[in-house]
Length: 244
Image (cartoon, rainbow, N blue to C red):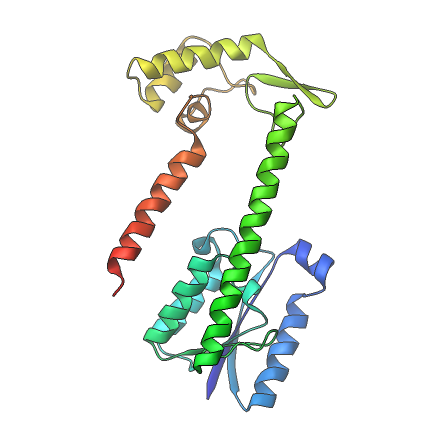
């Protein structure tokens, strides 16, 4: 049976866990040899974090290969090398199933060609999602704690400066934030606000004209995170409606 391997590793994972590209490739090759599978290709995403799926060229190539039916089995080193997001994992398994392709893993011995193997896959997908959400929750709480105590957490936002370990208000920048929000409340859109601030001589921290994306970060209730979630929400809704 023809098999294709998929490998992903970020640079920090290579150092911390010893699961380098070469390591994963050798394990997949050994696995296929022992299982009597013909390994026709190995797809790589090197130095790339989980991130958005469309930003992983190897992953996009893998989806195209699945659709072209160039494999009978997909072999991973482990499910985490594919994703820790449960929706991605379950969607991919459903996608593979549509083309009668089984999913095998070297670590954890997943084999979706059997019911017991599929159950093992589903449980591992759930556990990966739980771990992902726990990390996100802990990070969020830690960042909130720092901010609530006036400590610097991540990128220094416009309107503040760093003094030792604390954030201190920059009144001149705070005034720009106030002006931007006032214009937004009057019905100005992002591009119009950017042009207005620039025309008023209110430049960015680096002395350059404002852009719509930069203005977005100044506005109360119009954050980059909320906008991204809204777009993702529409995509998920369309996905759900397309399912049988």
